[in-house]
Length: 504
Ligand code: NG6
Ligand code: CA
Image (cartoon, rainbow, N blue to C red; front, side):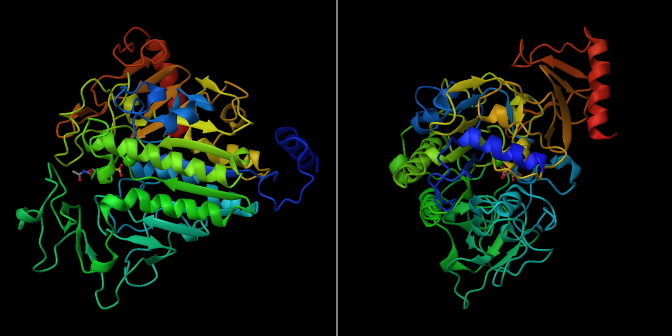
């Protein structure tokens, strides 16, 4: 009973006294809308507000950063997509789930249908919940017939509505899926998908290189769709195949529609953009805008999409009642498997900013990402060095909307997310391709790992070393000085705390 009154008190405090209107009225409701904007492979340095090259203009993201809380120590849970999305939506460390690894398009759903998720928590509070964009958390229970109802998926773990791509833009099936069904499928032309072997007579980048418009560099030499060779084999479904160059706008339209359709009730929209992940296919009107090739142009396109979506909120009169959160699933990569000039045209731009490593890396470039919250009239502009992780959104948003649901790993950092406090979490385990590192306050410890120091094809140092590594991230954000030998006591303390959290 007591806590119920406290929640009432807190919500009156946060939302002023305007709640005399009925709750249904979304513009003044005590339950703010939540718009979660999630980019794919956007690095710590890939946004103007985070120090991107002047050539990479991101005015819309910068606006949110400059008028909200811009986190400088904001982390994804992981250095790749699937585990980060798992952490974001379940509020649970992905290394606790052995299946939370980069998934093929045919992988089963890795979130348990009984598991608590961010959209489930919000649904229980009366929210409409929707996802538009990249899913990459698996679909079905093992075998999926793409021509029938595809379930379980997002709709079974908390989203009332979903409009998704199954895995990644470079993986088959290259079709949109709306509420468990492939969009625009012609039943006369069924879809088949296989990640092990090709379908007889179907062209691949190896058998028919003349059909390829975007050359593959490593991987990505299976089925060809729209001149782009993919990971995995696919046959049929011709009418349902997406247009890569229209994808950004396609998802944007769906996201806008979602907001327009739900303007009269509290909603949670998870808008998971595909940019700037490979294959980078910005619409031709963004071609050449960055001078950095398709990667830069795709970031500029993503920024435009974000601006359009914010305008939609404004037009609907919802901006003052919407908490906007923006982040990325992992750090940056230049050549992730296609020749697209990302390296050649980079110039002075540093996609990971001052950070070492990038996607796939246990160094901070892998997991420390742009992270910001914006709420017109409610959040005062500030930069925050509080240590926050995407996994914390579940318990924090739960506190915001008056729910008592939370998970053990997700900390309630609502004050930090609203810019009212600069205190974040004390400890955080970071994960990269099944290896883990430990951050405690300003210190980062990476235990010894066997394996290559760098991934040669993507040219990223991934953090492996036969030595224990200890860095002071405040003094040495670029992780150049391994202090393990100078501070053996610190190493011992950190190792103990790390093991305690890991439960080893
Ligand atoms: C890798 C792919 C890479 C990308 C990544 C997933 C190869 C050689 N590389 O295996 O291109 O698709 O998986 O990226 O196939 S993520 O952002 O979704 O985690
Ligand atoms: Ca990613």
